[in-house]
Length: 397
Image 1: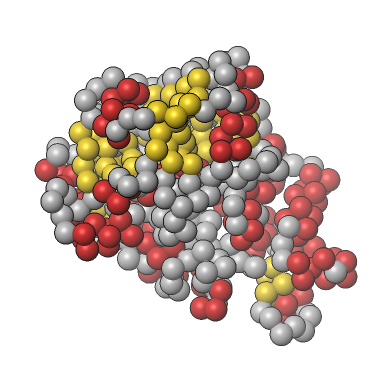
Image 2: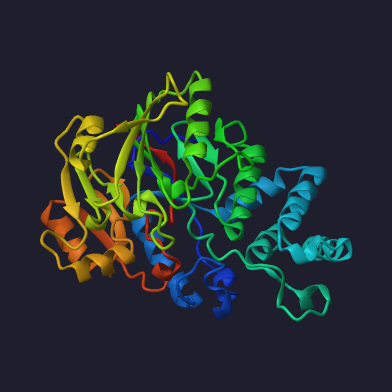
């Protein structure tokens, strides 16, 4: 069952995906299309991700791999449900396979794989034309899904429910087929309340969704999350009588493709501590939605400090990227490498990349325990530890 009513409660269970062949199957000519900043060296990325996982396990966090969850779901389904899942994945792949003959060949190839694990991995890695014995001037009949290791985005845990998100870019929209499949058929998760579905209007991604406390969601209005989607989530939460949330606060952040979510600008890391990028100051705006009136978004003319105090009822300690009085160059570099994008394991204990040296120094000076790991390859996908995690269960606080 899903239970996430805070950003900072002790993390008990989390969903991850260790990158595999899908990141090796990226052409340098397609980096922008596939939303990566550079080619990722797959073996190094895998090693870095395994070190990240080991930190979580060493801190008593149960780590669930996306592949394993999908295998469990697939094995629990009947033949019709399995086939519908595969056909949906085929139908939303590249336009080149609208050809029925090619579709049939892809379907036959996928079903020829010996194990369910192989089937799921092949869906993630992509399929070459030569694998279905077809000739083409392009390599892939089905593209790889290289952003899968950012498990934060395709769905988001919200209290006892989830939003099955509608991603902005086509290359990531197929990822939410997996989310929908899990929350429709997995024996443990199939009855989870759903506050948004992948075919709804607007777009929203998990990196913009925060649970500040049991009454309050904070959602980024960003390059990838629209007002229309936020209002839709508000209406759906209001409909669920079991849901405890009373308010949604909306934070407008810069529309930047490389810093695409709220968690790349501002992250809660303790009861009263927040890491933020000073580069947000010129464009940040705040709004409030009272869930009694879910379609009304009221502009709040307040400072960041006042905004955080209003929600937490505490005087916030704001820790800037690269530390106080940092050079603009250091702020820009460490913001670029997601220095706000830490995953909270418990209040004041966080995980993130070791490459953000000045930010880590500032955090430690503020009394935050930082468990850092090398992420030089993983960071090329534009995301850090928070992006690479989707909490399934946190202790209530």
